Structures are given as structure tokens and as C-alpha cells.
Image 1 (cartoon, helix red, strand yellow):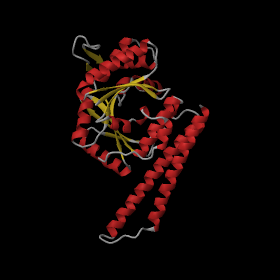
Image 2 (cartoon, chains in turn red, yellow):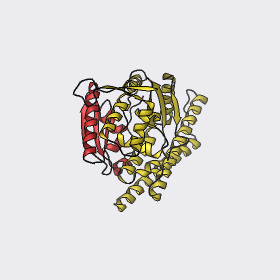
Image 3 (cartoon, rainbow over the protein chains, first blue to last red):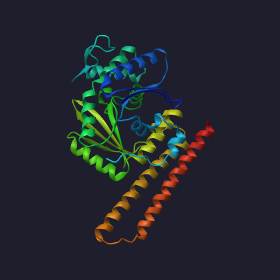
Image 4 (tube, chains in turn orange, red):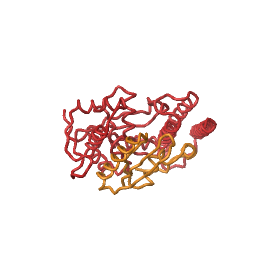
Amino acid sequence: MIFLIDYDRRRGEIVSMRTFNHDQSQAADETRLQLELDLKRDQIDREVVVLEAASEADLRRTHRRYFEDMASLAATPTLDVKRP
Amino acid sequence: MQFSILAGSSANRLFSLETTMTKTQIDRLGARLKKAQFEDADLRLLDGYRRSFADAYNAVVLAIRETLLLQPTGRPSKSTPSIVEKLGRESIRLSQMQDIAGCRVVVSDFSEQELVVSKLHSHFDTAVVIDRRKKPSHGYRAVHIIVTTCERNVEIQVRTALQHRWAEFSEKLADVRDPAFKYGGGEETLRRQLFDISDLVGAIESLEEQLRDMSRGQIASAPGMMVRIDPVVQEVKDQVDQTRRKLDAILIKMIDEVKKAD
């Protein structure tokens, strides 16, 4: 799955997240560009990123900062990661 | 050197032409981004440049998934703010940036990290290993492998769960408090605590490796026999537990300090 995340760094929160199928990477890129152009026009400072993972659960493990606050990141012990 | 940028194929797409950018043009774009004085046209150019990494990214991620049976999370292209920040803080040109495209693998511990790095290194002929465990970058520990394919670099980040925990925590701190934390700056107390945690991560992983070596030695010296727990082994295990508790205590303290400041 492909995930397009619009993230507000200062607030530490996701503003929006859209998902695309693996074969829609071009659509994801185009949506990102349009979003970046819109944000620039409105002078809004945000991070827009395209990520790809087997599932949302995998994405939440490897890119926790987008989904969790500081307390949660500090509190959680070792990750439940898949063994290679 | 020329970079061919194919970014979209239908007429109604935002970036509909095959564009060729020279290295000089890419670096000029980088210079404009660095000054944060860029136009819509620059964002479109950057978009096209980032998309030109697609073949390299797909080849590397596919190999990792299908040949090495790992499950990386991919980031086909670095975000605009991350590129702008990197250009601003380092004397690097856009065309030299090695992590425009990349992916991340999180493994459980140091020995798995060693195994995965070794597999990746053997698999990719062009692999260059950057080991940030012995010399952390502003506290950041991980192993990065740069693979060159289709005339593009792709960065593979391999982190242990502990290294990942530190990285995610410090990035979040940088997001919500001060971006300077990411690169060794920021408020002194919190910065020092971040470095302390990084040192503890290194200490825990080193102790766990010692334990692994000890257990290998015991099994080798007494095959098939019941092995009594060596007091030295127990001592190291206790040290690991103590160090983990110390690490957790610093994290809790940091959270309290951040809450107080808010």
C-alpha cells in the first residue's frame, strides 16, 4: 500500500492520510505535488510525504513519529518487529 | 551528466513532459530550495527529479522483499522540507544527496542487524555501508547502506528496535519542540538527555552482544550438557536490566520536562 501523509510537524499530528494501491504510485505522486502547491500558495508549512508499506500496521511500526505523541514513544518498550 | 526525468505520461498530468535536467540544473534548483526562495515551477522540477528515482527505488525494494525476504517500509522520495533542511545545514548539493529515495528495515537487535547488513552487502554489488553505531551522528545510531542502481542512489536504513526507538523519539522532539534537536542543537538539558539515552542504547546493545558470545561459548564448551548459569552471565544480564531501567527513567524525565515547559 502507498500512503500519502500530510503532517503538521509543530503540532506533531497527521492532518490527512490517503491510501493508494501499489500500482497507483503515479497518482500518489501527483496528489502530493498538488497538495504541496496548494500549501505553498496558502503559505502553510507542512510535511507531505509518500510512504510504502505492506500494511498500515507495518507503517505504524517503522514510522511511529507520524502516529504517536512523545509520551507514547517514550512509554512503549521494544517493538514487536518481524524477524527477517 | 544528464538526468532524464520522466514524470507522468498523460496530457492532463501536472508534470506531463519528459524533461532532461543536467547536474548543473539540478544543483541550481537545490540552491534555490536552500534559500527557500522557490516558485511553483521549482516544486514541479523537484517533483520530477524525485520521480526519476522510481526505477532505482523499485529495483532495490523488490530485491529486499523478494530475495532477502525482508519487509522494508519504503519512502520513494524525500519530502520537500527534509530536502530544504538538509541543503540548508550541510554543504551538500542536491545532486549529491544520497537519500532522496530510501527504505527502512527495523530488526529486533544488534545481531539481527549484523545479519541483515551482511545479507544486503552481499546482495548489492554497489553497496556502501555507513555504520553509525560506533560513531553516532548527533546520537543517531543505525546502519545505512547506499546502493547505486539505474544511475541513482537508494538508501537502506537498518535499525534495531532500540535504535529505532531513540530515532523516532528524537525526531518527534525535533518536530514539536525545536528542529535543532535533530542535528545536535536545541535546549541543553534535553539535548544532553538525548545523548545520554543514545549512549545507553549503545551500552545495552554491547552488553547483549557479550551475553550472546557467552552463551555461544557455553554451548560450544558443553555440547548436550545442562549448562549452569554462570554468575558472570547473570551479572551481565543484571547490567542490561539496570541500563534499560535507566534509559526508561531518562525518557520519563524528559517527558515531564517537556510537559512542564508546555
